[in-house]
Image 1: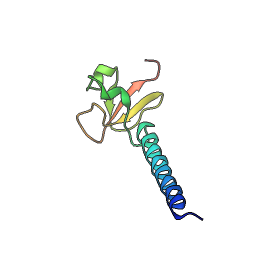
Image 2: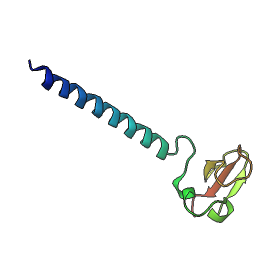
Image 3: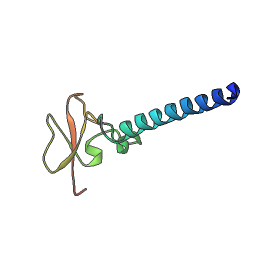
Amino acid sequence: MNKKGMEMTFQTIVYAALALFMLGVLIFVFSDQIGINLKFLGDVTSCESQGGDCFQNRQENMNCFKGMGCKEPASFCCIPENK
């Protein structure tokens, strides 16, 4: 078999694997698995301006995001689901 052709195939497989890995990382980051919510990346920085309040624990019937727009890093910004 042609060694140059085999090398190109191996290189393509490596690039494809790296692309799939990076896609997985992006999906993980943007799917709120680590507490990042894209709503807060705009010009709005406070929890209250999003219609929420800061709590020490997650609240029922509310969408809660860890530390986003709250002064204490361990608190959750909880926004009612109907907003």
